[in-house]
Length: 312
Image 1 (cartoon, helix red, strand yellow):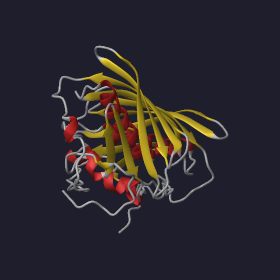
Image 2 (spheres, rainbow, N blue to C red; image 1 turned 120 degrees about the horizontal axis):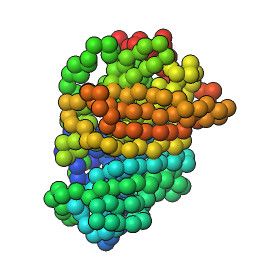
Image 3 (cartoon, rainbow, N blue to C red; image 1 turned 135 degrees about the vertical axis):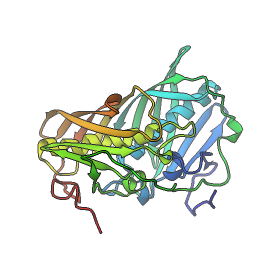
Image 4 (tube, rainbow, N blue to C red; image 1 turned 60 degrees about the horizontal axis):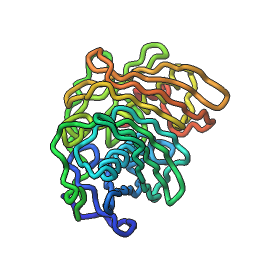
C-alpha cells in the first residue's frame, strides 16, 4: 500500500479497496463514498489516464463507468454478492480532461433471479460525461463486506510487467498514449490493410477474482476498433469514440493471448461505424460495436509507417 497522492478530492470520498497490482489499482486511484443504499465513485483524471489526444481514454472512462455500474447496483439492492458484466452500452457526451473529477451514480432498472439491469451516469465536474447502461449477471461468489469496500490508504499503482511471448507474426506495436503505456504492451500483426492487435493477459490486467478485468477488455476493444478502422479506411486521423457497446461472452484467464479484429460497417462524412471481435485461441470472447467521430486532427496517431517504429 502507498500513501495517498496530494489531490483535491471531494469531501467524503475514500480510496476503493482493490487488490494491489490488479487493473483497478494500477489505473487508480478510484475513490468512493457509501451512504446507505448509494455508492458514488470518483476519479481525479491524471495524465496516466489519457490518450494521445490528451483526454481521458475511452477505455479508462468505460472501466470507471462499469465499476460504478456494478458497485452502485450492489448498494441499491443491498446485496453485495459480486455481479459479472454481460453487456455494457456507453454513450460519450463530453470528454474528461486532466484534473477533472469523474463522479458516478447508479440506478437499478430491474432485477431478476439471475440478471440485473442497471444504468450509470458519470459526470465530470458536475456536467454529464457518459451514460452507461448494462446487464449484470448474479454470481455465487462470497458476498463482499460493504464495510471493507473503502479504505484510508491507496493500493500500489503499477504491477511488474512480464514477458509477452507473442505468437509468430505479432510484433511490438507503437500505439501512443500514456494509458496504453500502463496497460500494454500491445502487439500488432499487419497484413495489407488488416491490422490485428494482440495482448498477453497478465495478473495486472485482471480483477481480484483472477479473470481479465472488463476494463482491460473494453480498452483493448476500443483501441482495436479505432486503429483497425484507420487501417481499413487508410485514414490516420484521431477518431474519438462516441458510442460503444460490448458483449462479454466468455471470461478470459491470465496467460491468454488476446487477439482483436476490426470490420468497418460504414463511413459517413463525420462518423465511422465499426465492429470488432476479440478472441482467444480462435474462440470469440468479446464482441464490440461502436461509432467513432472523424476529425482532421492527426496528433501522433499510428500509421503504416509508425506502427512498428518504436522509440529507442
